[in-house]
Image (cartoon, rainbow, N blue to C red; front, side, top):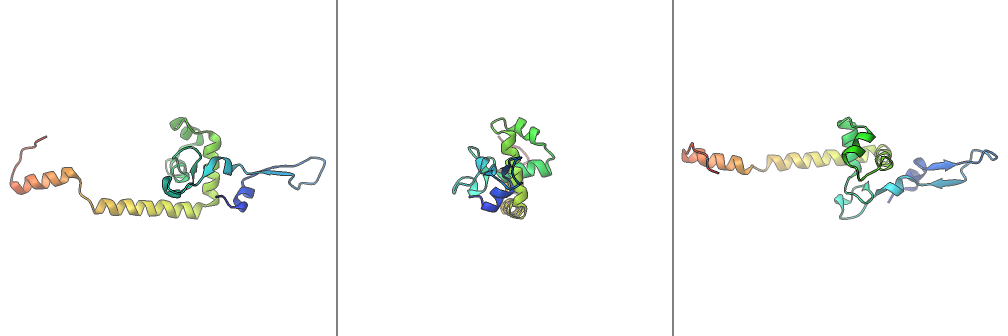
Length: 136
C-alpha cells in the first residue's frame, strides 16, 4: 500500500485559475499503476496486472540505459504511464529498492557459488574415470 506522502508527492494537482494555488482535487497517479500483493513477486511493488516489478523497470532504465519507450516496446502489455509510475515509485523509494536489488544479487551469487552445473559434474566424473569421450 502506498503511503499518503508518496501519493501526494506524485499526484496530479488541479488548481483553479480563479483561486489561490492550493489544491482542489488530488488524484493519486502511482496507485493506479503500482501494486503490492503478498505472494506475488515476493510482495515487491510491481506494475498492476503484470509480474514486472519496479526493480525490473529501474534496472532496465538505470543499468541498461533503456528509455521508457524502449521498455514499452520490449513489453507491449505495459504502457508509458506504467513505466513512468514505476520510475516515480523507484525514485521515491530509491534506497529501499536498491537494497532489495543488492540483496537479490547477493542471493544469486551465493546460489551460484554453492552449486555446480550438471555439465561440470559430468566432466569431473569423466575426468576421474580417465574417459576422454563425450556421450550425449
